[in-house]
Image 1: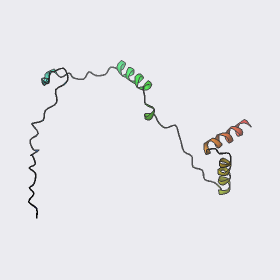
Image 2 (image 1 turned 120 degrees about the horizontal axis):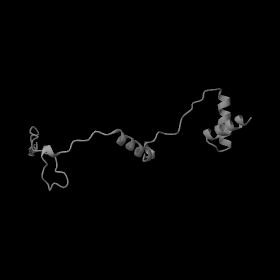
Image 3 (image 1 turned 180 degrees about the vertical axis):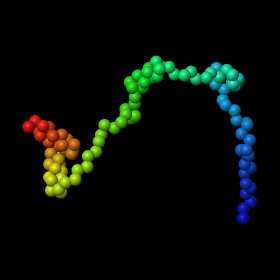
Image 4 (image 1 turned 60 degrees about the horizontal axis):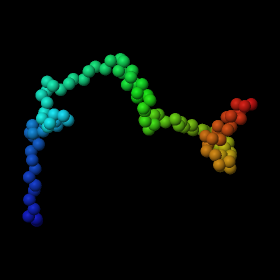
Length: 107
């Protein structure tokens, strides 16, 4: 065996030692509970302003994706023909589909 001893673990039963940190401008002293400001209820005007700001300042990563997905099921020879047409013209499927739909709609 070894002659190592177990570390002395503190007891976490009494959590009274922990206190909230002092806020800036109080010189390290804790403010009395009565001086802590309570949140003011948002007025409809403030809510509208907040929505307007949020609409303008949204991050692109938080916007919904603009891509979609379409799964086609059909005869294999038709799908192989479409894949070959895309490969020969070096186009993505969506790009070739756009060309085909534009030609169809043009009449």
